[in-house]
Image (cartoon, rainbow, N blue to C red; front, side, top):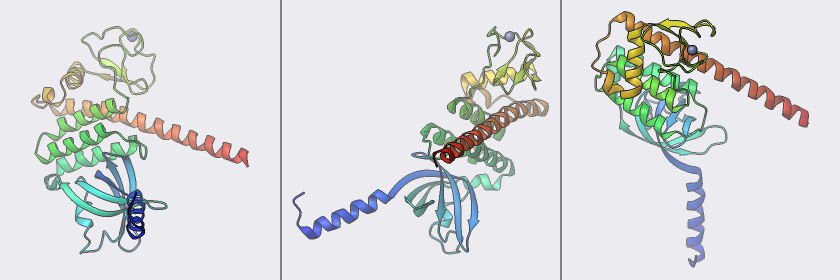
Length: 273
Ligand SMILES: [Zn+2]
């Protein structure tokens, strides 16, 4: 660079601050009050995956940041790298999804969506498709699309994007094509079992033909294939139960493996010393 010393000094100051600052698109998954007026937020960002950050003064009535950091709202943030937590220095709302807060059913389903995302992902593992799925699903809820169908679509798409797509067409044990009959779903194996393999897997539940059909339609055709299907409440409960059991199994197994990893890490760092 051929600039004279004063400019060079300005340039280096600028590049130092831009190293510390970064922008991202994010949705608030969880938040907790911290100190007198701050908030600690768990975000899912398009550019950096899940992040824990602090928004200083966000609980003050006239905070510039507070209104842009509500649950479910899609915001564009400026963050500064901090020692422990990165700090929100600027925020603007892209989509507030306000209608979700006025609809109990949409609110409950949106809360479930952000909760499972927080449980199934690790910090700073970027996955833009997961962010886009959450943003579009919240958008559909805010638009008043049937929350049951939107949420089942979100669950199956999220499981698929995170590498847990269930096997819906073939027996998870012997790979034979499944017949049109009730089959047990094994959360531990992530799929259905045929008549011959039934009983080989622990803790399985028998799933009816209609629920299996719904899952296959969702898997093949997405939300547009299921959104007009009218389903009664026993079938709703059955489908919620399958997803619930499978999501719980994955979350608990992952929590277990994280604990083992941490213990191994602690043991190895202990040995080094
Ligand atoms: Zn089988």
